[in-house]
Image (cartoon, rainbow, N blue to C red; front, side, top):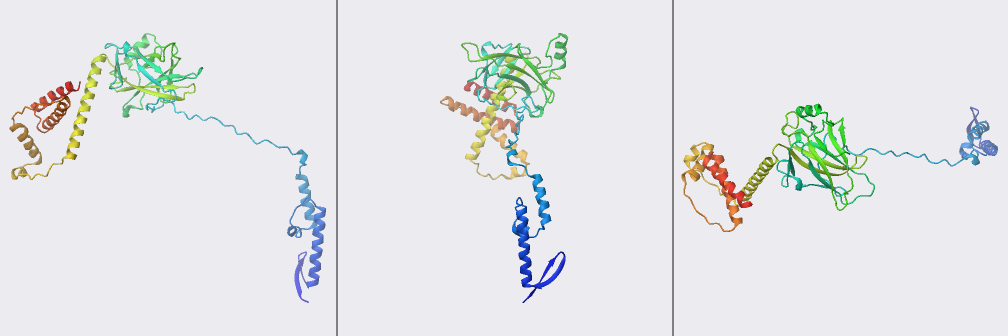
Amino acid sequence: MGSCYYEANGVGYISSEEEVKVKVEMDDEESEQSMDTCPNLNFPPEVTRRLHPSQLEMYEDRLTESTIPLDQIKDEPEPVVEKKEIGVFQSPTGQFPCTDEWCGEYNFEFFADSRTSSKKTWLYSFQLNKIFVDVNQGIPLQFKLDHRVDGEKLYVRALAIYNVTQHLHLPVNRCPNHLREDEDRGLSNIHHVLQCRDERADYHYDSASKRYSVVVPLEHPPAGSDVTTLMYCLTCKGSCAGGMNRRPVTLIFTLERENQQVVGRRTLNIRVCSCPKRDKKKEEAELKEEKAIQMIQADSKKRKMLKPKPPQTPSDDELSLPKRRKSLLSVSSDSVQDSKVYNIQVTGTQHYIEVLKHLIMLKTYEWVETSSPEAQESKEEYEKMLEMALK
């Protein structure tokens, strides 16, 4: 019969295998009795065997204290998380207002009523999308929506900004001279360059961006019409020192809801001047000249790509001269020494226009290289002929 080592109450004993079996059976019986006396404890058997009956009673007392009857347990509702609306709308009068054209869900549009225009008050240029207006002269603008829900309140905000990048962050303010004059006369809203001649107009000031804007409720069109007319005016000239100071200005019209949510945007270039007709004609001529130059440059680049020039071997005399003198020599030999005149008959207006474009290009190159006044005069003459042909 073998022997075995076991511990009891902190003391080690060596006994036979039969004595060990009897000891294990006694421990199992005590564990079962402990489970009977403590039915609320659901310990595994292997854990229960290691616990003393006094320890089991202690756990039972703790479990009884923390146990709640089933009839007293109520289904508590889950906590409701309040969803707060976060303002995600960017302010239409911020430091860098958006200038992108956007008709929105209402197909927001506006038109300048040219029937009331005059060369002394204001004129609209379709080529430039620009209005030329005298100071304090009313401009009737017609606003149109495709559809609208009955009872829905919509507003039109008008804001003046500088459309040049280096001045975009600056607010458009009035000049000190006109501001002082209106202050002496006791007028209201004297700090606003852009004003609306409507009794319902509400003048706003953004303290963060220092910008002034005017907001007007957009009413339903009158019977028999699909547009609503609002009258705007500007109280300073574009040349006023301390004000716009000859910086180009753009008007932004935003369609907004009551919470200032922008649902449409349109822009309009404007110039406040003493003679609208003169300035309109001048800027349209500059635009036409710029387009003609771009067209000539595009044609010359295309011609160079399609027909590359063959390499030329310079002569000994040309190699001995500086590069600048060499270019002058080639131009002068072609344009100055060769003064023979050729008469060419051109059939068709389109062919005539193309010939004039090439002549303007040649005279431009000659004038740049030689600074010849004759070349400049010929260039200007051809440009006038081209302008008449395009009309």
